[in-house]
Every structure is written in C-alpha cells, then in structure tokens.
Image (spheres, rainbow, N blue to C red):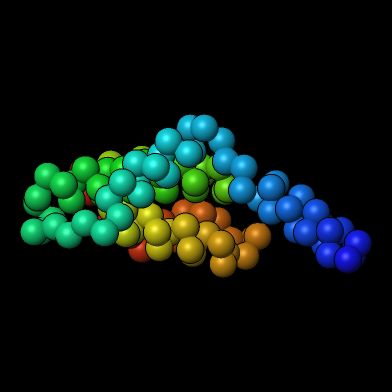
Amino acid sequence: MKWKWILFAAILCLTGGVCQVQSSEKDLLSQVWAYNGKSYQGVQSPEYISYDLALRNYLTNQIRQRFGVSLDPKKYSGFDLLEIGSLFKCKKSSEPFDLFLKGFPKHP
C-alpha cells in the first residue's frame, strides 16, 4: 500500500514540472485552441485568416524559444512553420538553419 502512494507522488512530481507553461505561451496556445473543431469555407475566409495568424504567432514563438531562430510570422504560412519546426528538430548540429529555410517560399 505504501509503495502505491510513493509511486503516485513520484508521477505527480514528474508531470507537474512538464505541465508548467509560461503565461505568454499559454495565451498564444489558448488562441490556437480556440479554433479547435471549426471548419472554414476557404483560405480567404476571415476565420481561417485569424486562425492562421494565431498559429503563425504561436509557432514562431516556439521556434524562437527552442532553437533561437527568429522568424517573421508574416513571411511563412502556419503549415510551413509546422514543417520548419519539424525539420529543425531533425537537423544535425553542424548544419546551418538557413539551409532548411531555403526550401520554403516567403510570402510578402
């Protein structure tokens, strides 16, 4: 019985540190989650544009925090930033970040 409480306390301690998020990041994440389950008529609909902007802001913040690379959220689409973040995770330490950014078109 005692080992169950110890195991429960250990799991609680380990997950408590993982679940903590900064308030600014929490605000950006809540903006993205506000669009969960919604459907859009097209890429020109105002709801989709605001969703894409919230996603781009959140992802550029994540990339800046994890990799130290500042990207302009207006130059890349939200889905391009998802792919850029994934490529940065798989990048070798000797490879420059610019090598991965060349494959993505910049939107004015």
